[in-house]
Length: 167
Image 1 (tube, rainbow, N blue to C red):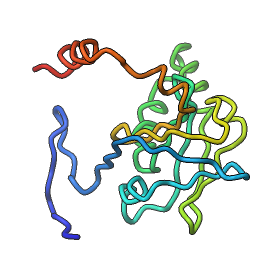
Image 2 (image 1 turned 60 degrees about the vertical axis):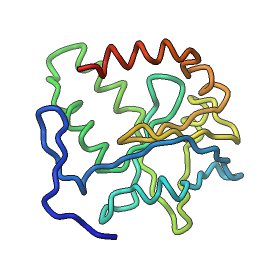
Image 3 (image 1 turned 180 degrees about the vertical axis):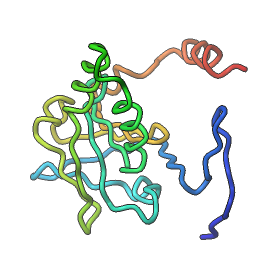
Image 4 (image 1 turned 60 degrees about the horizontal axis):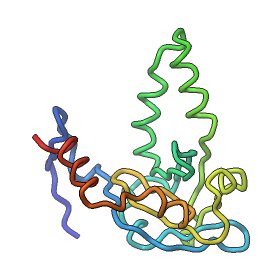
């Protein structure tokens, strides 16, 4: 693999080094083992930042799913959340509810990590897991619940794209 030095990508007003970006896409049907461990698909594992520990940060999603971040990506979110003023009640509520549901998981030698039982219960995940790459993070869903959160009408998807992506 060739590493490009000093390559940058523009994200809005910010320039970020190209090699530091994480890019997860696609859907992956997975199964938990008897101990509640999940094996990361090779495509997702290959997108984890090089040189970082094999540490993942997992939090409860806003929908009934789990959000899985590489440590470097979670640090960006943490920086925003922890930077809010503790003197504002809404900020404190956000910090408390957002950060209280975060756990650390480390990949073992086989690319597996343990999903805590309380998190599995929150996302209503039993054996089957749908992993969904969403850019800098991966969502873990109960497959039946995931289907209910997908946009079924292409016209609706088109309207959302026009609203948020049309320049």
